[in-house]
Length: 435
Image (tube, helix red, strand yellow):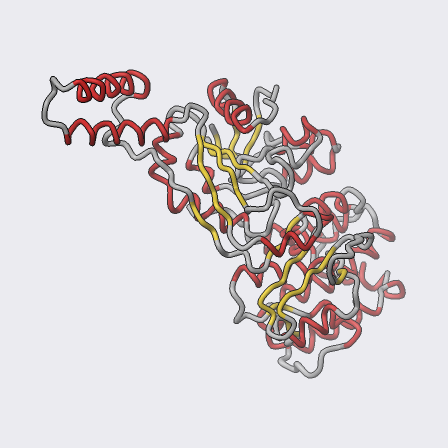
């Protein structure tokens, strides 16, 4: 069982040609996954799948992330949702506590990182003991069996995570400890009941061994940080609760969503940004961008790369020295959009400490979450702002919307691909679990 950082990670990328392989080689796809490459570990994974009521994999080698999701098995099934019984019923498989160091490659919900971190933080000793001999799987219960319409998402108030093993060793160990207590509380070994308890203890010991001093019982875990979140359901839904003025908003990515049961807004609704600004959860504060000037440069250069993809499709702009880069920009100056010009001016202004007013043309790019909000709300709002901005900030695009990023990446020319790889390698904060 190995942590992966090299090109041996071949998720669904091996069906997508050289461009995806390039992402794998640069570590942008597959980094941090754990390789499952022994017959014993594959068997344990399959035992968990079967116990969940899911089809076993025929693969001999695959990689898994923090929730046990495998890109190779998803490709084998042609189903990225394979580790679930529908979008309202996600599952997880833990083969090693080392999965705490892994990212999550296909999160169903934006809170999956925090939820899995709590799983590992609270139960590491038990998971370490249990995974010596078998896998552990988790039923992530939202108390909603089926999402019928987006309104069902507002019913999610807490998550209860229930842990099981294929051998049911946790239940057996708990029963063994009860038998020990019964035996110790007895006074007459000749008593028939005491003899029955002793026989049951002997049978238990023969089945699972002496579990008196082992910590193997993982209690149900409650997770409550679900007030605001993003889910892949219904083509992508943002549930924003606890807004100071309106209280609650549902924002849908899918423009064709037809929901008559309640009010919602689409990400293309021009009123969504002013509404969130009025709520005080986002703002376009240039002093914030002064502290994050590199993000402003990424926004600006994204427009340049779009042009270079058309005019210089084979040029690796990032590998050029500064003089050559200036020459390339000069050669395409007539084709640069107004957004590039406005953002370039803004970069120079902000660097000089001349903040002034926010340029209306690019204001939609300059919103950021209010820093006073809880971290989970900040994450969800960044995700929403990234989608509204069309994924133009390539680092946030990669962080929040990897599926769309990989699809877009395949259509880009050399300038934009190489630039994206470099920006992500420089500025992306990998959402690994704590070490």
